[in-house]
Length: 233
Image 1: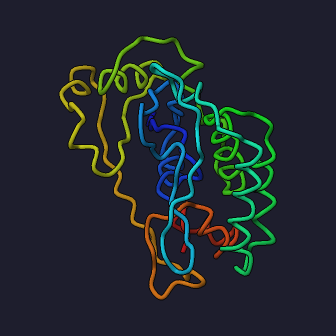
Image 2: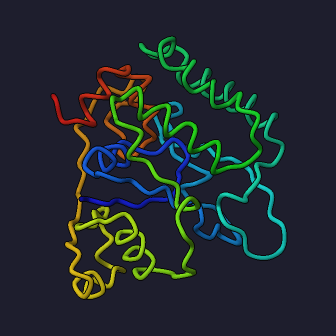
């Protein structure tokens, strides 16, 4: 039983979905703490604009004190949705699969929820489903018993909660994970190093790695992006 754990990111990159494919259960860490300042991948992601990578950002409300991602509200959600639809139309409107993919993105933009994590989870589930990923493997951390643990201890606890035998970590996580904690609980630890196969990106002189999954979707369509996720090239 392979468990992967990740925050509910905004329009995640391809590696996020590849990790989802490789796991038996994928925990959406919606109870993680949202940064007190700045932002993270839960409210921003890189897309292509004019052949360059640029940030697409959701502005959020920042009340005083600590708040979890699932309690973070989008600032002026209706205005942001309208602005984002326009931004995507300007930058991807002439891409080969814009007509096929934009309705999928727009459904999420029309979601009335003001909460960041709820919107992100809606997009993640919808995109995963279109990429032939069984969405029943997705689990919200907030649906599981809370422990108050942080760091590696939290990851170990969630893995055990779901009867996991192996924890699947993302590339580069070996710098902060306390591997001995997994060993002490007899949980295997595996690192995933996803390398996206370069694909044609309309408007770019050379391949730009690390962009949102929607860049691949607008360039390759559902079937082409699914091939990248599942390794069916």
